[in-house]
Image (cartoon, rainbow, N blue to C red):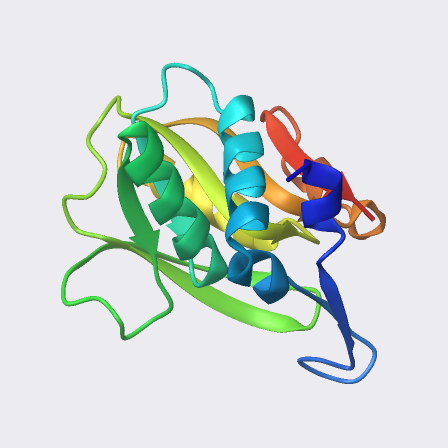
Length: 172
């Protein structure tokens, strides 16, 4: 399946998680095996060749990160919401376009000098991706880039990640 056809499966859900927000739902893409393969292959094409680990942001980033890790032999580190990890190395809180959130990095999951790509489904305001990069760097990792399926340029996420390699398969 061609990437543009795969991305055409994205669904818009108005007023989720709150009124005024349009949620871009990747579920139809993930549910279609050919679309999932097209998206994961396209993400891989943009990842820096020295990358060793995928830092996958909860929760849809987990699915993409696991597929990348398995397909191209990267380690996969889940960046979790609070209360989900038994041992936390680092924690960071940040602003979203509709509130605040916190991400945690598991203890011993990123080694100093390790080359890490941050992966998620959507780049909106950039708060989540910036927090993920900060967590990786606090552990001594080197962020090789941020890769997402969808970027919403009007929300300024790329600007918040200035100086970093940011790759998006689609901008809306």
